[in-house]
Image (cartoon, rainbow, N blue to C red; front, side):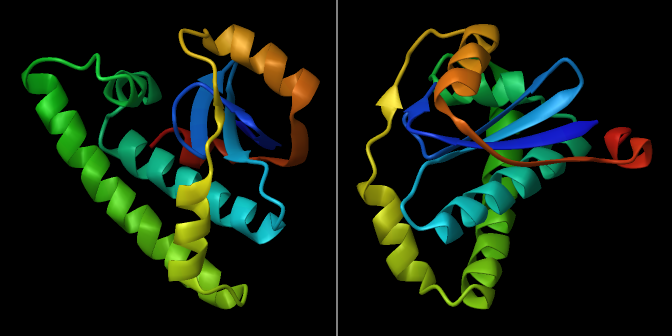
Length: 151
């Protein structure tokens, strides 16, 4: 599986980070911060969150439903609980990375919360991907061995 990391100012939801799968690639997106270190923090957060949720059997599509408040029923109570746990672990990893990069984590979180991304509601992954490739910037990509993909 390929992992592609982009930065952009347009998002599918009111957030500064996103991830989705498309044609056997995991796309991780960060808001285009002036300080690239914030982008790397968002990348790590989204990467950790994605794999923890995948290991628990939660798909990115289910998370999308939570993000749009369209999630309903017993299944989504479990999804929300797993998301909350994964999000907290991802924040912990982000905190460690911030320290390693010489960032003040609390200050970086305040900066992140000030951001208002351009939100494009009801945009399919395929359409968002076109926008991402046109207006976003690919920072890096790498391939994950199949053993990790099978989590």
